[in-house]
Image 1 (cartoon, rainbow, N blue to C red):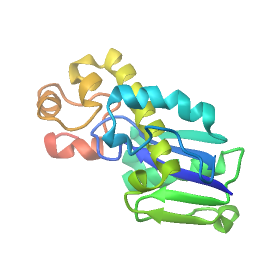
Image 2: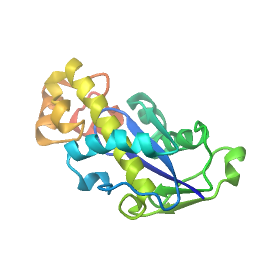
Image 3: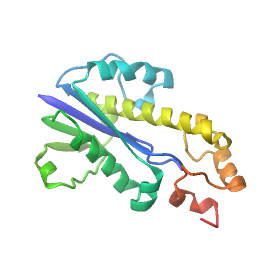
Image 4: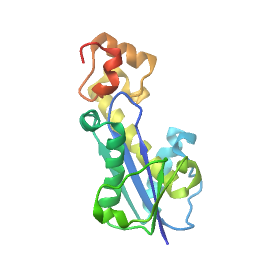
Amino acid sequence: MLICGIDEAGRGPLAGPVVAASVIFEEGFTIKGVTDSKMLTSFQRETLFPVIIENCLGYSIQQICNLVIDEINILKATMLAMYKCISESDIKADKYFIDGNYFRLTDNYQNNINYETVVKGDSKIFAVSCASILAKVTRDMLMREYHSVYSDYDFNSNKGYGTKKHIEKIKEIGVCEIHRKTFCRKFLCDI
């Protein structure tokens, strides 16, 4: 039986995309050291990333940019990224486990998939843990790349999250092109 895990990274930050990943394995397959990405160090996640890709039967990583997040809201953007992971995968799983408590299918073709949402699935289901690692590593890499363009905001360390230093910088110089304006309104009057 083919099992697919789906998770996202980056729902809460003030800047950057939301990234979803799906990973397909044969049921029962495991990789030593894999757990919820939040329980791993950056080094551990980056070490596991290629191991997961080399050992899985298929994977998909999708991102939805800040402009779309601002347009449709973060929940819909997250669902869109997860949906794209399913619809754009070359391999179809027998069962899909989606981290969280909500997922809504948007296409009649997809309504026939067997899926289950699992709260804290990234710490309970191996394939979801793998997806959480792929999503987190990918998003962190993107934010490091953005740091080279927008170094004032310290994306290299805060990854777009609303740290005190990041919020102070937004108040001081305003937002940049990758900020989620709907998330930053409370810090600026003119957005």
